[in-house]
Length: 389
Image (cartoon, rainbow, N blue to C red; front, side):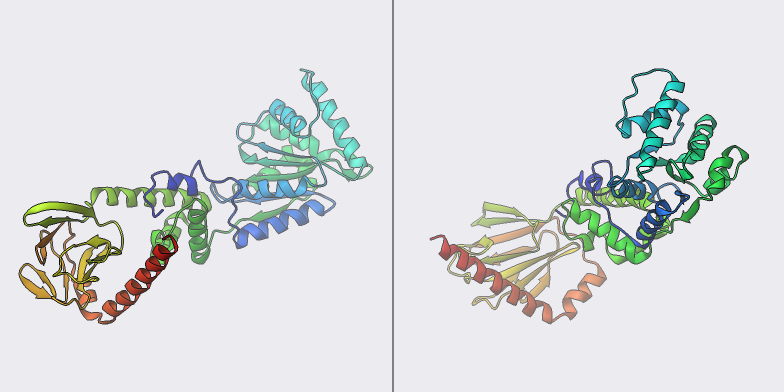
């Protein structure tokens, strides 16, 4: 699968991507180490800062998995978070029943649970993503929770994520209890160009894509890194745009094809969707020409993104294109290859660029390399055919 599937971009970088796939990079790993260390300290409070799309949610989701091994954990989205949503969300994720409808009773239930767990040296952990977007009333409740302690130990470990202004929010006078805990802060760094390349190619391969180095060559990775500033969220969006554009370009470009005729009557046609085709009399050829004039392995078509090249494979009677015998040539639209009583017309061939013309003309090793590849390929096919006889 090479960027042909319209859904591949979404599977690799969008809404259908594997949520469990994590492509770690240096800042991601540093952030995890920072959170683990901060949560093990007596103050048990940390701030994770970075712009939208910097990977904060991915990081705290991974850290939640680690923290849940020895403590109750809740991860709450802070966007427009209200006090009741905070209380019910925590109790639900702590697996505490909250049948009462009264906010004060909910708070008492939560307080009792936090106290009980802290006495067992298992203080629960609260992650609030996008804490800087919570309502002021929810932040006041958070400040109250931050002051809870049991025998000198804080009853709730707290991790907040948000943009760079998160540190300033904690210093506000309404957040004094949290500020007294002196939460450690870590600001995420973007991916480097090398990390960007690994990130893009890994996610594409994980989604089932192939030839990731062709979809995302180094120059494309560098450009995407520049446009996204190296932040994963923006990088995902840009990658989807690139893959959509590739599909559009492929759809707009007609596929080269050949029409095979014998004595003026069409006998076959083939779309040239593979990289190479062997023309010959043998049954193992890709395009079989049953004519005594044609050698068993007569010629080869090499299909490039911007050219189709014909190579004569040292055939007995040679290969003719437009009445001219040729050993190697770049085919133009509507060229006619003559082989005995057969004619092969090629259509939808892209115009030849000067760069491709020079590349094909200058490379004498190209023919030898493809001859070697062809012989190996034919040998494998013969072995396979013999095994199934």
